[in-house]
Each structure stands twice: as structure tokens, then as C-alpha cells.
Length: 431
Ligand code: AMP
Ligand code: GLY
Image (cartoon, rainbow, N blue to C red; front, side, top):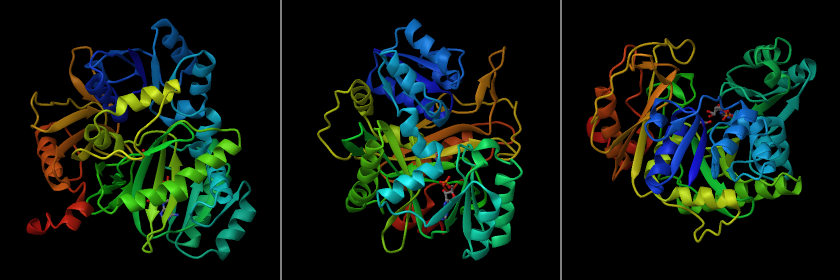
């Protein structure tokens, strides 16, 4: 089988790694890939957003299955083009991907399907948005409706801050077109959870829940980032809770999308806020695998590839409604100095050959210079996944490997998985 993975980040390296693990005979390609995917297959010099060129490459290289990593090419209709060309592809169509690419659309779908989510209003003009904000309780959340690279949701402590944010989005073009429509939303308290599910639009297989760490600093302090680390499984995500998420979130959302002529296939990612009363409120949907959740999930989930192939080819008949993690996994992101605002690029990276037993190093923002030296090429540079019998053990392995990797400005959190470790009591000895 010849498989193409579209994208070039840590998620895509993890996808290639899992494909190779599950189907060692497969021939892998990536567009554009990175130095990590280059160790597993062939990188083609095509950006993920060059959708016409991606379709040409699929035909030229006789690709049997395409897996699309990032949201942007999904929102641009890459899947529609590949389907029109008769090529099996894993991922939603442009219409179905609106569940991520338009927060206004997602809110409307959730309202119609009675999916638990924060009360909200949507606005495309400043004055009505400001009137809503003036009456709103504090804190509150202002979100650009369109794709904003994970930076489009602003949690505002005060109405003044919310008004400034709304003005920046609607009147000052701070987020380009993505901010020309906004959602003003009630602030929800609770614990966040990422629940990803495979689906062909009808059947659903829920993956083990993961938890992302969005803040830059330890103890969840500092600015929001694309994600500084993730772990799975999460013990508060009991089978009963995941069943509730299926019934109250995933099934009604898929039904409503299908009713609108936008049947969803691929992986649906629900970013949830678990309220104190146990209700799973949807903060956002993503139309793809999470990054860095994927770097933790896939190593803990052998045999995933079969599902992706069968969903793409329409032959999926899963025997189970959920997949269980066989190990605990903790993925720690090594970021560049200055991330997220102004990452410093260019530093040479040294990854020891045998970093640490029970760990995997996934490339994200790296490149090889003409002399073959590995260098920093993006804000999130590597994701280092530790595996273990418990989250605490996986976290220790990940942290030990992170120590051994060298580059100037290396920035990372040493507390990925801290909530779970605290729950298990395993962190108590370390205070
Ligand atoms: P989003 O892109 O919508 O997932 O938002 C990014 C982050 O902002 C989330 O992971 C939450 O930490 C936070 N957030 C978004 N919406 C809310 C909300 N309604 N209440 C509290 N926090 C939120
Ligand atoms: N980890 C958050 C995301 O993939 O959007």
C-alpha cells in the first residue's frame, strides 16, 4: 500500500510512525513532511495548502490512501478534490470541516442538535457585539469564527478587555477574515479534555481521552500556545463519561451535519470542558487529529491504521465502540526560545541516537541544512513521547529524554500530566 500523509508537523510524523508500525510494508510519502517523516518515507516538496499539487502527486505516485493532518487543507476542500478524482482519503469534506473552520457554524449546529456548549452570541458588526459585551457577565470569551491557528479564542477577564478584543477582530482586522465574524461566549469552569473519535458519519469509535497543556508555563501559567504537551489515558474520562460524550455530543453533531448534507468522515475532535456536575460542554470542534494529542495517542494505540484505511475506502465495520490505550503515554513539546510570540529559529539540534528506552522523538519544527545538521525551524520543535504502565512512569521517561536533547533556547514544561499524576498520588513524594 502507498500512503500519503499531508502536513509537516509533529502530528504528521506520529501518523507516519504509526502507519509504519501497523503496516511495515507500506510505502509512505509526506507533503511536505519534515526530517522525521524523511526517516520513514519520501518527502515531496509540496506544501499542505497546495491542494492542486497534492492531488497531482496522489495520481503521479499512485497513492492508495491519503491522510490529511492539518485543518487548513481540509477547509479548502482537499478531500472533495481527491474524492472527485476517485482517490480514497481520510478526512472530512470542506462542508463537514466547517465544524472547525467556522465557529459560528459549529455553534449553530450544536444549538440545533442540543449539544451542551457555552451560551453565546455571534456578530459580524461591532456595535451589536459591544452592546452584548456591555451586558455580559465577567469573565467572558471572545472568539474569531474562522481559522486562526489556535490563537482565535481570547479569554477576557473584564468587559473592557472583551470590547477591545471584539474591536480588534471586527474593526481592525487583527485576525484577517477569520475575525470578521465573532462569537461572544460565557466563560465555563471545569477541567478540559480532548475526546477524539473515528467516524464514517454514522458509526463512531471513541479513542482514549487525552489532555492537552495549552499554557506555556508549568502549573498551567503564562500565555496560550498551540500545546506544550499531552498525555493519555485520562482517568476522569471513565467509560461512562465517554459514553455520555458519544450520546450527547458526537452522535447528535454527526446527525445534524448529515441532515445539512455534510456527512462527516474522518476523526472528530471535541475539545470539552468537564463541568463540576459532570456535563461535558463543547468548547470547540476540530476536524482532524490534535497536535500534540496525536503524539501521545498513537503510540498507545496499536492497530489504528486499519480503521483509517477502512473509513477511507468505505468498508469500515468496527467491532467495538471504543479503543483502549494499551499503555500510558506522555508527549512533551520542546519549543524554541521566544515561543509562542517570536520563536528564535536556526539553532542546531542534537538528538542522541538512543535517547532513552521507552521513548519516541517526533519532529515538528525542524529542518536539515545543506550540511545535514538538524536545526530549529518552528516554534514547536520536537515532541518527546514517553511510554509506561502509568502516566507517572511515562512522564518520567519523557522528561529524561527531554534532558538529553540539546539545542540553544530549549524550552519545555516538566509537568506534563500533572493532574493525572496528582490524582494517582504518584506525585505526592515529589511534593
Ligand atoms: P478554543 O480554540 O475554542 O478551544 O479555545 C482555546 C482555549 O480557550 C480552550 O482550550 C480553553 O482553555 C479556553 N476557552 C475557550 N472557550 C472557553 C470557555 N467558554 N470557557 C472557558 N475557557 C474557554
Ligand atoms: N491540541 C489542540 C489542537 O490540536 O487543536
